[in-house]
Length: 322
Image 1 (tube, rainbow, N blue to C red):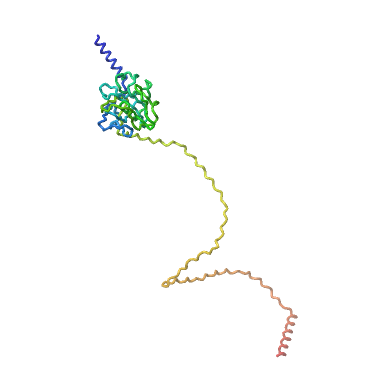
Image 2: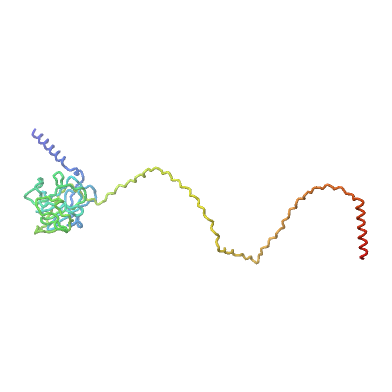
């Protein structure tokens, strides 16, 4: 009976743990090694890109080593609900006193922790000097949007600086947020005092982080929107222009250029055309009316005698003259 109760308790505990695990556990997970690429830089320009040729690969941890310098990694944070980075892992981090810093993609400071805060009871240990950054809106520590970030790790009193000086306060057992950071991007790191110069390994355990894909996703083609259906406009009738009375232009005073005369070829004279006489039309005869014959008048005898007398006198006068 006790065995059955023990099994039931274990199943209940396992179910409770599974229920609280992030959904990202279904994705492939991997560890990133600093020495697999080279040496991590300390500023955004020289930071080590945590990349993979495969997409959606969960980044479980980063393994590297430091001494009197800092390492900066370019990672992708995929969750809005939770992000965790910690060196409070048993026997995985041998560097005795670590610090963790989180910057946005432009190098502005967001979060910093020297030693794990007592508020993080799952990782807090007063006997160690390990570091933890936990961004969880459920405990009021802030919210991060999905995107590219820079995660830095350094030894105690190796602190990030900007053109305006130190970016974060120099406190212990506190999680400093964006409101505590100087609004100036990371430019270098400053050693405040003597620190451990031994090159020792560290392991940063992560939640909510992913590898940056080396292959840019092919964006989906933007569909061409159909043209809006607009009503066909009724054409406006063009008004008939009123004819204008234009005056006839005056003839130009300049004489026209004479046409060039064509010189006939001597070998082939052009015959002059013979003008044919145009026949005159024959007029139609006019039919005159036939006059009626007058009746012959017979002279009277006295008239005939007088006429003969005149002829005789005339003839006698003519003979005297001759």
